[in-house]
Length: 298
Image 1 (cartoon, rainbow, N blue to C red):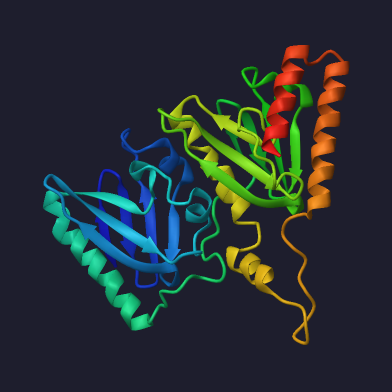
Image 2 (cartoon, rainbow, N blue to C red):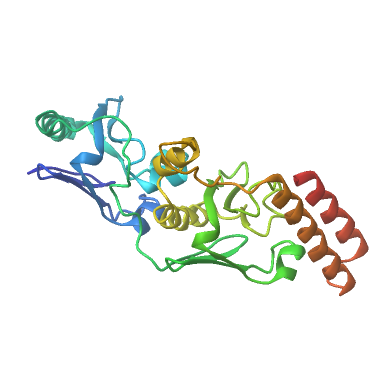
């Protein structure tokens, strides 16, 4: 057993699994503490490095592309401090850190773990149900459906449409960008109907606009990851998109709706806005502004 215990957390390697446990110190980000312990199978690892610095080093575990739904959902946009695959190492413990890294490297070599992208997720992601309260509302996922309940501070057009419920089978992908404190982030659920939409997050009823507490909004990555883990793996979608008709089999249906459906979605959005305007939910000014945004988005 190779193990290193630091303020940020603990890494333990038993020859087949790297067990990463977040530290309990108050400096450890809320996201890492909430995500909890992660068990990384050796087959999901592509490498490990120890990056020396003047006052402390950084131990980084590199995973194979497509192996982890967390990395897939966040696209490498997690802040360094919140990245569970990074461990700050004190100067007097760099020898231990290098020993742990060398043990992982040796096991990768002996087991001949491939470096090419994984064809399926090798980590499960966070358990469900999972629910997170953000600056724009509360988003929940029970394994089959996503539900968004808008906050009092959400755009009026969002609140007027009521809670948004999205079946997993209707989803094409999840898009996530963290709130940096300087620029807003978002969590967007892209469906077959909205795949062409370019609405800004604050107007999009399928997106949470992340503009409040950076610490709290970062937790939306939990939902993004849980949903991503239950969607078709990227390699499957790519293979389906490249499949051609002919003697080798039938043509696979496209992942996005055709242009006719695109037009239908636009008309449906405009009808919904018209109904909200007629019912007095939207003022003339709000209706005109939101309609212009929808038309630009499509």
